[in-house]
Image 1 (cartoon, rainbow, N blue to C red):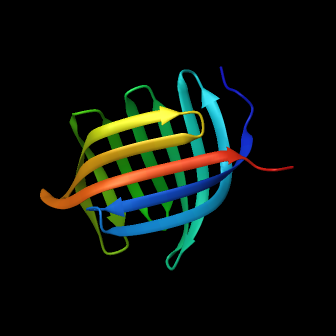
Image 2: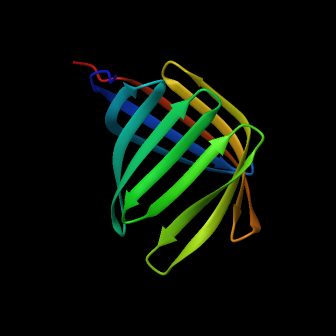
Length: 135
């Protein structure tokens, strides 16, 4: 069973190796389907529009991106999982291993080790905060 979609304001903050931080604020939608919670939003980058879906369910999460950039990043606490990252100039295999995966109403927090084509690409801290848009 699905819940109605709720318009939300989403703030995405990514910190790489505790040094570089990127922040993005966008408007999107939040909804529930079965036992999972979903966030859906779009962002504009140089190459075009990127559509992102974040799925959160218990000790698992999945980030899917499509459009100008394609990415599939699965997460499960303390398990190394395979994903993919596709850019106009090529596709890479990725691996993620979540050290922390926490989710509460309006907040998603994950710390994970990331590999691209088998090479360590850093430890990422992803924080996604969202709240219903003001009417």
